[in-house]
Length: 280
Image 1 (spheres, one colour):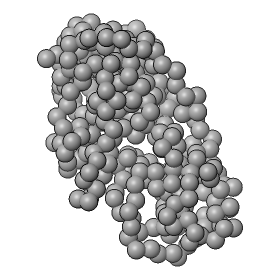
Image 2 (spheres, one colour):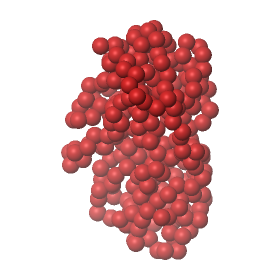
Image 3 (spheres, one colour):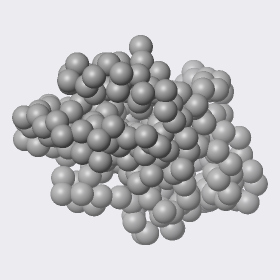
Image 4 (cartoon, helix red, strand yellow):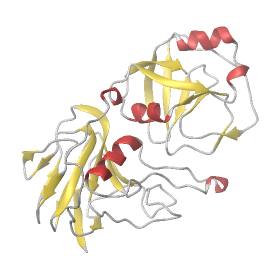
């Protein structure tokens, strides 16, 4: 079995797949790649199944050495990737030789980059390789970690893919009505939809969305199910958009639900980015 070694981990780098299903009744989050569209494309380019683990890179990339030839693909955010000091193209299949080193530089666009490696392996816990503190041995990739991968098999894959131009820098995110949508007066829903939101604090659990004219509410609901993409109206009148590592229940009104594509788009928007919500 071939191996890659993490020489340095970057700001926040983790192993992710399409998520950990079937354990929400135990309070465990779904997890999985924040931008699942880009993760699937990375696996497609290197002849992997779409649920195969990928390496998710956030803002600042790792330094990785490969001990054997393999196929590599980089999708999502462009963090100026290089192989042995030479720039390589995003969204293309890349042939790696023994002892090649992958590094990253300046962030050009997006937030999260996905590294697909042919036959990448990682220890799974509860039917998923997605790292999450308290479930997997580690919550993220660390210096000195190593991952196994299968010997390269060129097969019949795409040499490159075209990405959705709307994935990065979205000015509007599509939402549908949430379970508690009707608890909010229609005029307030319209006021929220006509406003621009700014991303404040954000991580894999959720994004705080601040608006200029918050709807201060004193609504309370029985703690109920929430899922990735649920948008809650907080007591401050601002919104909270739950993401892939979100908790399984919440007590704030669930007024909107991001579409799957909108979750991917939000995962690629940086702090302070401003956008509107579009009700579908």
